[in-house]
Length: 146
Image (cartoon, rainbow, N blue to C red; front, top):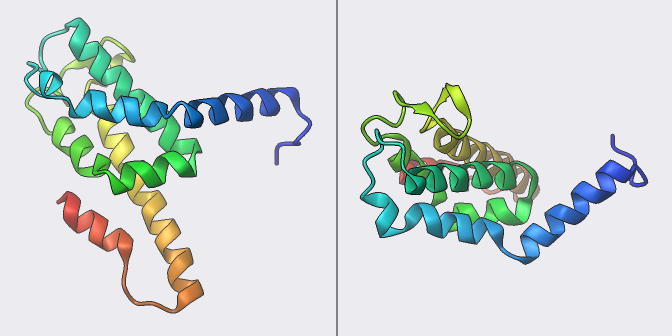
């Protein structure tokens, strides 16, 4: 466990709060959903392609550490959008110029979708055990994404 007094932890928590207040996750989601980025040839390395991939990395980082971001992204279709982008021709075969040659361009989008699905499942499991409900929001999210 991180001590609430650890300076690194305090700075990171403060930075996360600023990013949440500025709604960085919303900006990144709008970038990957924009029509101009949908028409990209994913096999080419252009500034627009790098911007879209960087936005995917921001979504991955924010969804990994912020429940506010995750909830927003889940409710605004980021899972299906991320999977759609990852399945574009060449996205999983082309090396990333942002992350390096060891990762494909589409990897961050697969990671975003996976992170959000896992968080929806864990949140849904906790809510189901509290309420005794048999409806599964995480299953609905997965079916929607497929």
